[in-house]
Amino acid sequence: MGSVRIESSKNYDVIIEKGILDSCGGIIKTTAGGEFVCVVTDDTVDALYGERCVSSLLSAGYRVEKFTIPHGEQSKNAAQFIRLLNFLAEKRFTRTDTVAALGGGVVGDLAGFAAACFTRGMKFVQIPTTLLAAVDSSVGGKTAIDLDTGKNLAGAFYQPEVVICDYATLDTLPDEIFTDGCAEVVKYGVIADAAFFEFLKQPVRENIEKVITRCVELKRDVVAADEFDNGIRFILNYGHTVGHAVEANSNFTISHGSGVAVGMCAEAKAAAKLGICSADCAEQIESLVRAYGLPTRSPYDARALTEKALSDKKRRGGTIGVVVPTAIGQCRVEKLPVDKLYDFIRAGIE
Image 1: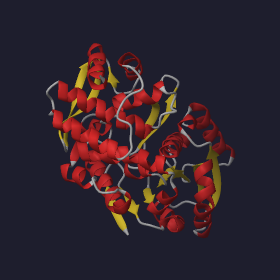
Image 2 (image 1 turned 135 degrees about the vertical axis):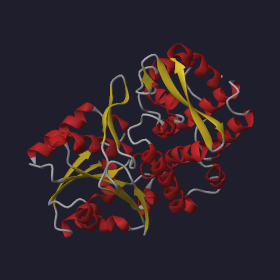
Image 3 (image 1 turned 180 degrees about the vertical axis):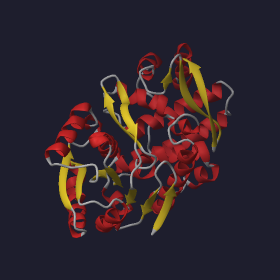
């Protein structure tokens, strides 16, 4: 059994092991306790893993209710959030009970925010079933829903009791969803670990436990230093300023990973033009992104991207943060005046 300890306002383990889903009930009993669990999942994941998860929880002595949403980013909204809160109230959950998020980033974000809000805080467990959730969104305590004007604009920092990562679930992912998660994997190499970046030139699937573990270790170090995103944690947003704008312009028909892939390439290219990193650095990033079958070019122009980016939560007053690589494995945050963002994005996509 692989495990990474996360030290934050609440310490917890990320358990990484093939086949561990069938033991999730006992793990949750040990870490969260209580008697009642609400499994939050989506319709796709429910068909694949819902019964196994519920069966394990029942075997551990829990009463279980299940709340299912349609798959996709469009479900990470206020309507589903209120629907989930009402469900928890109608089923008489209390703050000593647990919400278990079985699924990808959308499920984890929505379930975590509901757990943070209902009765001012329930127990919360993450059971990621996508690569993106395993390496990134299930760890670190960020929960959120999207608003009409932007992504993740309502949310809370809320750490789980445990993260149970059964990477056997990744075997049933469609290729495009697995590839989507590879964008976040590449991100970690660019911002924090040059050796890992080089390692990623090997196939991820053949080294999946090592890849997940290393990404979680890198995120652990950042979260330990800045849990509430007031400083160095912002580097985890590499590719996301432009990436979220790409997603928003597409009305979320372009996936998060594809948006981040485009954003990483654009932000590196802009950094090279500004002399922050070398042209070779930007080319290496684009080459690896392309090798994973991810997009490298924005279908939207700089004006459209700028408009959406200025509604993003990364804006602080008259500035907006952009993460730029200084070399492979190193990065820094540039705080751009909002009237300079258009020029930066244009430099990155032209």
